[in-house]
Image 1 (cartoon, rainbow over the protein chains, first blue to last red):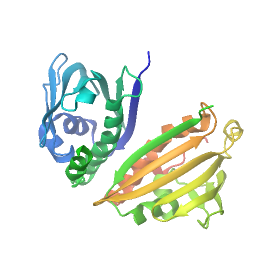
Image 2: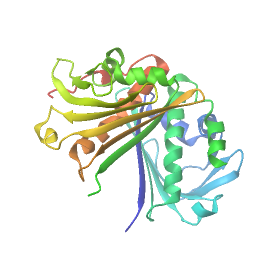
Image 3: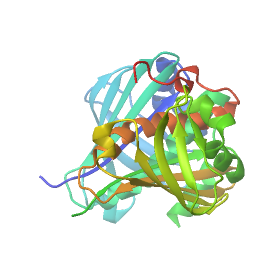
Length: 155
Length: 153
């Protein structure tokens, strides 16, 4: 079946549990994720929702698989941009592995649609978010201007 | 024929000049890029050589376009593995753009070949190279593992 795929791999000098916590806990997300956060119990079958300060609910879905701190699969749909919502649910997989003093983090985002605008949008967002996450965990300081950059991107 | 292309974007809290120099100067590359050294006078049309820590030529190439600190395009030919050399050169481009306090770095590696093996192999390595570069520039401290040339190669 025709589909669109985005894959991103990065290495973060932090323990795997810390990377997992930063990916799943709102108090961390708000610092590096353009000011946004997610709400979920991160258990299989649980609801999953993402909120951004300037838009409210932006994305929602369900946890399809969960194996903390190694892997989570999210059924993920955009809720606030009609052209993206129309594309339906995507599948986001986050995989973490310890390699020495590093955590290897792999994020993939797929949708069963060719030339997906949703996958194009997340392809622009993930590198910013994960770069800011890496800076946050390694230096204690996220990329401060991720929020303004995100606002510009939505104009 | 459609070719093969790999694109990777990262954002680094450093000036474009600093990122550009870290991509090309041995005092940086030896600390995050498997201990390798790139030798070139970094002018358009100049030859480029990438050397292993024990001094073997690993890649050869040419500087196709250079505009520090915004853009660098190079032709790269792997010299280390005969089956990769056989494929011919790939084309590597760095584009740098300052966005507030961070530099957006876009790496593109392209080949006219479909299913290019060199890009298949290098696309596995780029995330570690560029994450290591980011860690070095943002923390001042390199990742020891990334400064080593792989054993047995």
